[in-house]
Length: 183
Image (tube, rainbow, N blue to C red; front, side, top):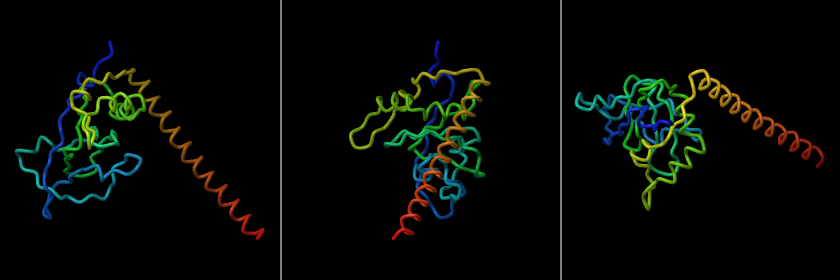
């Protein structure tokens, strides 16, 4: 039987707070991610967290899933900041079973998973994926060794794409240089 996401992670919502100039905690929002889904590293604390809200603090290995908007990225929080919370645009996934957080991020960002989740999105102006829809997503979990292999293959594939892009850029430069020399 293939488990649902809700069976292998604890899902909680991010929080909505208003920024202030005397914050002690980083407030992670969608705008804080680059086009590759990586967290921008120079964020400034802009909210204040009280003891009552401390259960929203992120821990290394927590997964942020952007539930609102067109880009439903998943990203792992790697404890870059002493204190950070996710905005209400995110669900925070806290793995409870033996699954690598990086594998789960890979799985959630996979085109097949994205397609399933987008088919469940609701909303007329801003599409939103509900906690129920996210929690019901079936997650195929291979053993840890296979998870590590999948991540290694994905890493190599990304490196290959970067090298191909660099190669295309160099070819363009060579072509442009030759054309200019002929004029």
